[in-house]
Image 1 (tube, rainbow, N blue to C red):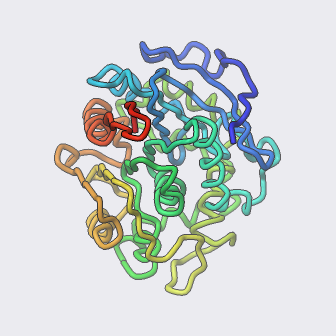
Image 2 (cartoon, rainbow, N blue to C red):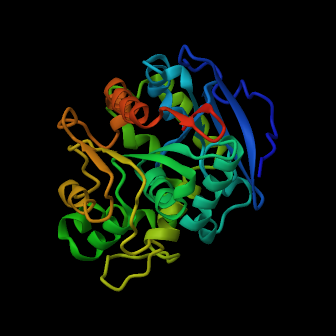
Length: 336
């Protein structure tokens, strides 16, 4: 179904913050079940691209990709949709009544995205780009469980949920690198200053910090985003202190993804067992392209550290899929 755009262009979401040369408009979209997502939109082409941020981010973190994606070859074909996901910025979250851990089960996060695609995709499939949990808890699940809605998937430093789930149970490297998540499963984490995640990063300048703190003030802090961990990795339990082989999570086992898939991976990511997460993809993703060359010295924050390279790789991948096809029955061309 088509969803109602509830709000006009929002020009005051991040007052005084530098923006791309391409105009960016903000709309609120009702995705049903009492949930509203704020969505940044750029471009006006017929091919929709959905970009899903991770934790602790928001839609504004895609800013470095907007101009390179839209101004490159064939870029005029695209419209970029960059939602603030459930629990982030001005979208429905802990500050607006979605305070329970169960409200952030990945099935509900994915349902938000399905409704959003139905709103912006005009009845067709979209290209999905996801970073971090936006990829793992939504993008990969969209591609695996709703392939009719996904023309292609690009995952940036975003593990396949089945691979990651298995590694948490069996791989000591992943266990060690993911151990920071135990703190996220405590009430004390609700009060942490997540801006410190980016301290010292060259791209996290004063303007970005202002935008970031504005977004997190609107969401009431990190609680909504932390509930993604609590609901899915920890199975709704608080105070978990170790990963076990029999632990309860919400991730599917052995999920196959048959849509064309691009994985971009910064090899200096300290949150994951990089080699094991990439190795585990081959049996589950038959149409897989993995690019690590050029990202050998790139950390988890791949789109912020290398926006031009990331945009070029994403654009080349999507351009290779997006092509004119002759519809012989109607004798007309269409973009897919």
